[in-house]
Image 1: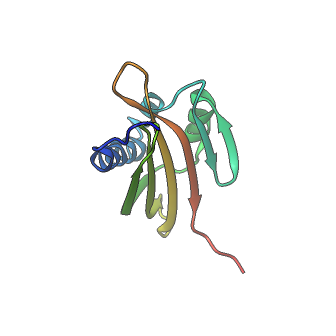
Image 2 (image 1 turned 120 degrees about the horizontal axis):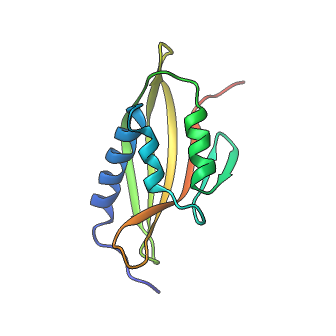
Length: 132
């Protein structure tokens, strides 16, 4: 059994602030690539799966909104036994002139060997849209 990271909650909140700060700024959105790994990152976006930093960034860059703002309601984090951090984000996002939509996004951060930093190993995003 590995050790739990005692700073998991602070690290999770810092990551969420940085991630959505970059995502919401069109001029900085491409820098999200620094969070992902080409060989070990996966994303599920609305049920569609992507593997590797380049495919993930291709999907992010293909989104058609002009403006986006994430409003975070809650960030829940858990330390993982391998030193990673599980993060669940609940919030709303507003794109262009559309009404706000609720969303849920889950991240698994894994430690980068020998660097002391983390990368996003898993990223799962889903709008909270319900149809009858």
